[in-house]
Image (cartoon, rainbow, N blue to C red; front, side, top):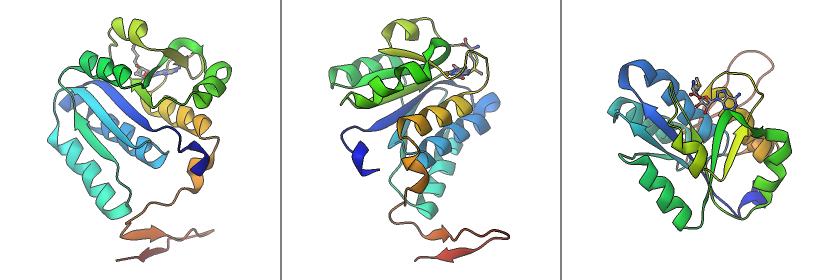
Length: 182
Ligand code: SAM
C-alpha cells in the first residue's frame, strides 16, 4: 500500500457496551486491522477482554495495530482535528461513498473513521468533516467499515503482508496450509 503512505487511518468505535457489543466491537477492530487501518480507539465501557483478544491476534498474525480506550470521544475528535487530521463518520444518512471517496483519498490528512453502535449521538454529524453512507440502507458497522476501507485503498489492502507475524497462511484451492515463521 505504498502509494497511500501519505496518510494514516484510525478507527473510532463509539458507545461500546460490554455485554451487548463484545463480539461486534472485536470484529470492528479485526476488520480495521485486516483492511489496512493503523489502530483504533473506542468509547463507552472499557473492555479488557476485547483489548486482549485483539492483542493476541496482533501477536500471532503480525503488524502493529493497537487499540486504545478513550473516555471522552468528543475530546479525542477535537484533538485529532487540532493535529491536522480529518474525521469521517460512517452513517446511512451521509453522502454516498462513491461520490466522496476520491476526495477523501486525495486529501493528505490522517483519517479517523467513526462508526457507531446502537444509538449514535447527534453531535457526531456536526463535528465530522464527512458523513459517508455505504448504501442508504441500515446494516452494520463491520460491513460499512470493510467496504469503506476497501474503496479507500482501492483493493491494495488485499495484498498486504504483516510484519513480525508468527504464522502465515499459504492459500490453497482446498484445505488449510499454515506455516510458522518464528
Ligand atoms: N441506529 C443507529 C443510528 O442511530 O444511526 C445506527 C446503528 S448501526 C447498527 C451501527 C453503525 O453501523 C452506525 O452507527 C454506522 O456507523 C454503521 N452503519 C450502518 N449502516 C450504515 C450505512 N448504510 N452506511 C454507513 N454506515 C452504516
